[in-house]
Length: 147
Figure 1 (tube, helix red, strand yellow):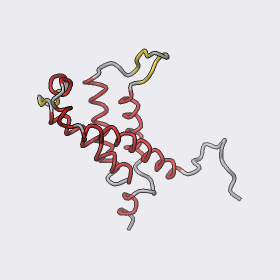
Figure 2: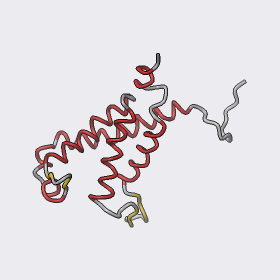
Figure 3: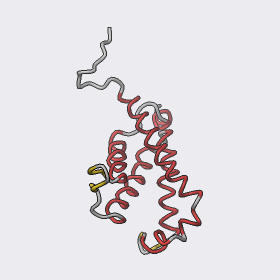
Figure 4: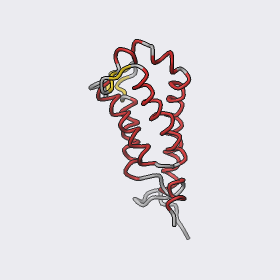
């Protein structure tokens, strides 16, 4: 009889855990990317994207388009588990750029209710974990690569 391993170091169901993480984190980031996608023109012309964000010397629409690609499209790929490591790499790069270049040195900030972590740093850590673990068996990667 299988016992519930609550106090064990063994995984109960690692693939189900990876599926939950992929779907929840992917959906949260996809909503952020979708907002940027539907408001693309206004955001590309805003002072923040036109003046403050610079990626390889490009400003405005180009870095915003790359961000939308990572946050929206790669998040959708992450949710279904297709090209998981590639999409998590783009998301890793995007989040690292945000917390290292756009808002440097702001991993931990003093907030209204004490200290809080930078959201981009939190996403970075989760994407790093998914990069190393992969999608798990409940993914399109597993279905396509199973032969």
